[in-house]
Length: 323
Figure 1 (cartoon, rainbow, N blue to C red):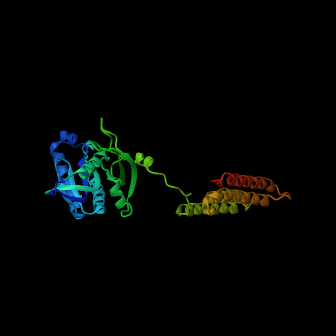
Figure 2 (cartoon, one colour):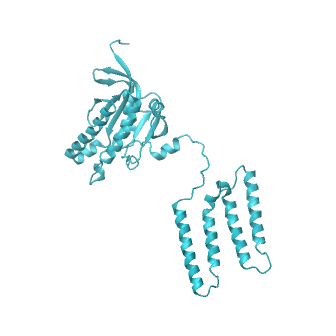
Figure 3 (cartoon, rainbow, N blue to C red):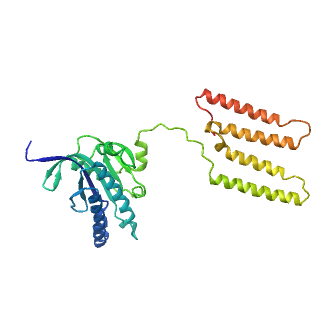
C-alpha cells in the first residue's frame, strides 16, 4: 500500500437533485436559481452540524461529518426545510433531493474524498426516493438509539458495481414528499414506505388498551340528559303519565353499550359488559311492567349462557373473545 495515501473514517452525505435534466429542459434560469437556493440551505445546515462540503459538481453535493449523529440529523433537517420551500405553479418544476448517508473508510486527497465509502453513499442516494434519505447499516447502528426519528429496514440490495449485497435502512420523515413522487419511466423502483413496512422484521404486538372516556363521551352524556329533561317536561305538561320512562331506559341501554369498552378493564370483558347492560335494561322493563311474572329471567338466562359458552370457547383457543 502507498504510504502517502491518507485514510480516515468519516460519515459521508451524498445529495442529488431528482430529475435535474428534466427541470433544466423546462426552465434553465428558474432551475439554476432554485438549485442555488437549495444549496444555500444545505450549506448552512452542513456547517451548523460541523460538516464540510467536499464537492458540488453538477446538481450533486458531497459532504463529510466527524459525527454520524450530526450527519443524519443534518439530512433530516435538510429534507424537512427543503420540503417547506417547495412551492411552484407547476408540480413538475418542484425540486426534490435524494440523500444517502454512509459511515466508512475513505482516502483523502487534498480536499477531496475517494474510495468505496464515498461510492456507497452515492449509491444509497441514487436508490432513495425523491425527498427521502437512505442510510447504511453502520450508520443505523450508530444513530438508532440516539435520534428520535423512525427507521425502516428495507432489506439487502446490491448497489451498482458493488460485489455483494448491503443492508439498507430508510429514514422515516413526515411530510418529506417522498411518497408523492412518481417513478420516471425506465428507472429502477426505489424503496417506498409500503415496501419498508413489508420488509421490516415483525415485532410482537400487545393488545391495545381500552380507550379512555374522552370529551366526546361526556358530550354524548350531556346530550342524552338534555333530551331526557325535555321529554320529562313534555310528559309532566301533558298529564304526567310517566311514559318518559321508556325512552329513558332505551337511552340508558344505548349509552351503556357505547361505554362498554371504557367500563371494561380489558378488551376481553367488553362482551360481558354489554350483556350486563342489556340484562339490567330487561330487569328495569320487567319491573316497570310488573304483572306478577318475572319474564326477564328467560332472556337474561339465555344471555348468561351465551357469555359462559364464549368464555369457555375463548379459553379453549388460548384467547378470550374480543369485542
